[in-house]
Structure formats: structure tokens, C-alpha cells
Image (cartoon, rainbow, N blue to C red; front, side, top):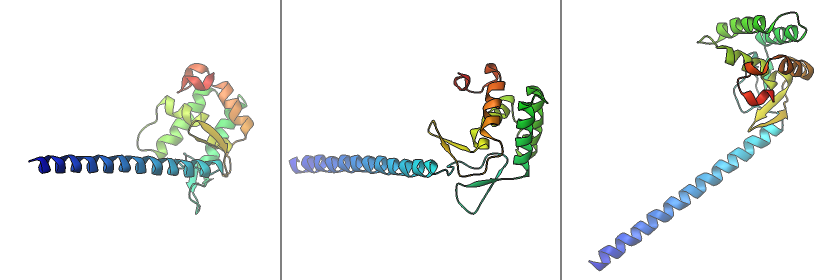
Length: 162
């Protein structure tokens, strides 16, 4: 009976050690992948799928503007020049988004599109912003103007307006 208990204890010990090693390996692998992804983003590549107005290229993580991107850029620029209001901009962008998405976008989603720094040539990753390798559809000045012109209450994430 003692040998059976010792064997059970030893088997349990081995199982526990295997579990600890598996968790350690998974954590190290996760950290390694995150480091590689961060390094790639720091070089200007995107880790996300292309935003509306951009298409895939032959290079993974590098996207190019398409015709829809030119329309988005034009609407954002026109908005910053006070030629159209925020509501008109939202309406135009909502129509563009509806034509390319399965569901109708809500106001918050359209405002998020307007605030996306990717359109100005930047990539956001883990709370940091990096300069992207992709071609921007608007200038940084236009992006900053859009951010300034959108009222605080319209921001999807209230911390963005601070």
C-alpha cells in the first residue's frame, strides 16, 4: 500500500512539474511573439488588418490606399476646412462604410474612423504610436485638426479628448 501511495505522490509531482514547465514555456513564447510584433510595428508595419480605405500589398503588414481611402481623405480634409459640418462628415463616412461592411456603422464607429491615426501615416500598438511605412491619405496636420474639431462628447474613448 505504501508503494502505491508513493507512486501516486510521485506521479502527482511529475504532473505538477509538467504543468509548471508548460505554463512557463507558454509564457516565454507569448513574450517572444509580443516582442517580435512590437519590433515589427516599431519598423512601421501594421499588426492589424487594413483599415477601411486601404488594401493588402505583397508585403505582410504593409497596406496601400485605395479609391475609398481617397474619398475618406477628401471628406476629412473638407471637414477641417469648414466646408462641411461634423454631422455631414459623419453622414458621408457612414454611407461609405455601409457600402463596404455587412452592418450599418453607428456614430461611435464613424468617429473612431475619423480619429484613426493610421490615415495620417501612424500605427498604434499597445498604447503607443509609431510612424508607419504605409502611404498616408491625410497629413498629420489634417489629422490633428480633425481631433481638435471633434467635440469631447463625440469621442468614443473619453480619454482621447484630454
